[in-house]
Length: 121
Image (cartoon, rainbow, N blue to C red; front, side, top):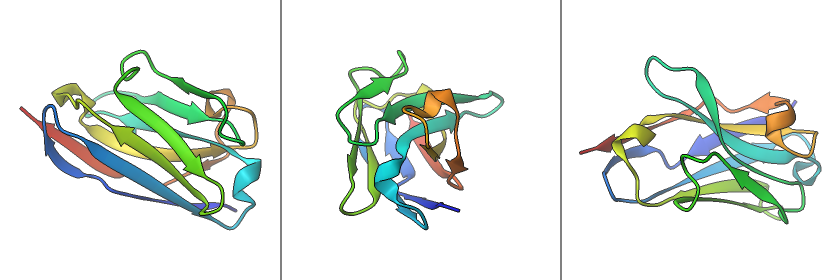
């Protein structure tokens, strides 16, 4: 089992920035693609961003392209999500995800417990 622990959530005003971190343990981190999903109130969980095992390739949902950046530090077993120009509609619970495939979009093997992001107007 891989344990994924998110941190960095909270309350921020629209236009502001936050950085989420997800610390992994229990498995060889560099063997897994990592990513982020989110679930807004009353909505289905949706894909946000993914990064390959080496960190050389990333992909984003159209709704966050140009505002969010995913990165990873394999030496620290941590994946990050830098969120800039936050909008009220970014309010959601954000989940860290790990996959043995090339991208989390192809299937998630492990989930974090989630962290709340609230963007106020």
